[in-house]
Length: 439
Image 1: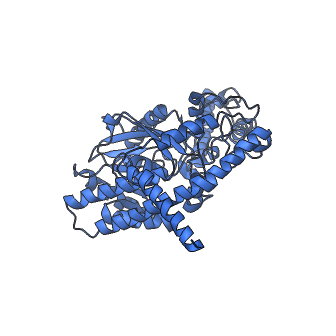
Image 2: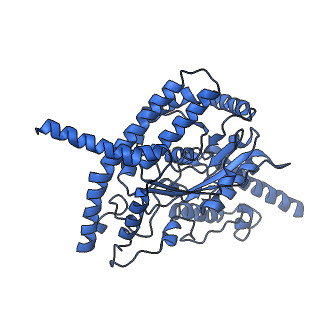
C-alpha cells in the first residue's frame, strides 16, 4: 500500500467515524453518550489545582464565576444634589470640584463598563493557555496535565471540530440556498426549519456544546418576540438548536456575511446597517408587519446591540419594545470554566474567534425560558425594556447595568455630559435665587 492509498484509507475511516458517531446522531437530535463521557472526564481533569494539586472549588462555585460581586471601593450612589449638599453652601464654591474629582476617580479605579468587554476572570485556572499565562509551570504534575491537554485539544478535538464545522456550515449554505429557490408556501417553511435545526445541531456538536434548557413550557411562540442577553454569535446556535426563529441583526462581512445572505434566502430574516438611520425605520416597519401574522416564526432580538462578556446585562435598546406584541425573555449563562464564549468583535474577527473557541475544552451553558411579558398600562418602552432586562439578569445570575453597550466602540455621548452640566447649573441658579429671596 503506497502513501496515497494509506492517506485515502485514513481519510475514509475518519469521515466514516465522524458521520456515523457524531454527524448523523446530531442531525436527528440524538446523543450516543459520547459527549457525556467526555464531560465527565473533563470535569475530573479540571479538578487539578494550579497551586497545590488540590481539588478545585465545587462546580456550583464555578458556575457562579463572573456573577456580580461587591466592588473594591464603596460607591456613593446618591444624586448630585445630595452629594454636594454637605460640601457646599448656597453659592458656587471652588470646593465643588472635589465631588466631581471623587466621582471621576471612582470611575477610573473601578470601571463598570470597559471590563464587561473583556473575558471574565476565573476563580481557578482551567488549563487553557489563553486564560492565565505561565500557570503550567507551577508543578511537574500540572505541566504534564497541561501538555496532555494541549495534545488532546489541538491534535484530536480541533481536527474533529473543524470537520464538523465545515460540514455543518457547507450544508447550511447549500441547504438554505436550495430551499430559497422554492416559492413561499408551507413546504418551504418546513424545509427551512429542518435545514436550520439540523445544521445548527451539527455546528453545536462542532463546539462540544452541552446545553441545559430550563422551563421549556415557556419557549417563544409564533407571532412573538424573543429577547435575550448577548455574549456571542453562538447564542443563535444555542437557541436555534431548540427551535427556529426569524433573526434580526447587523449586516456582517466575511464568513458571517456569507451565512447571512444564505439564511435570508430561505427565511425572512432582517439584516440592517447599524450606521443607517433609514434602515432602523425600515426594520421597525418590517417587524410590525411580521408580528401581525401570528403564524410567523418568533423574532429573535438581542436588545443590547453588542456582545457582553456574560457577567452582566447592559442597557436594552427600546426599539424592540415599541413595536408591540408579546415578549418572551430568555436568559443565557455560559460556564467560563470550560471555555470562553465571549466574542470581542473589536479585537478578533469571526474566524479567529471560532478557532479560539474550538481549541477550548467545550461550550457549556444554561438557557432559561421565562414566562411571556407584555407592556403594562401607562408603561413606556424604556420602562418595559428595563423590566425585561431586570428579569433576565435575575434569572441568569448576571449583574444589571444601566450603560449602553455602544460604549464598546464609541465614547460617551456629549448629551450625557451636557445633562450633568445642566443639573449642576440648575443647582447653582436655584440656590442663587433662593439666596436672593432670603436677602
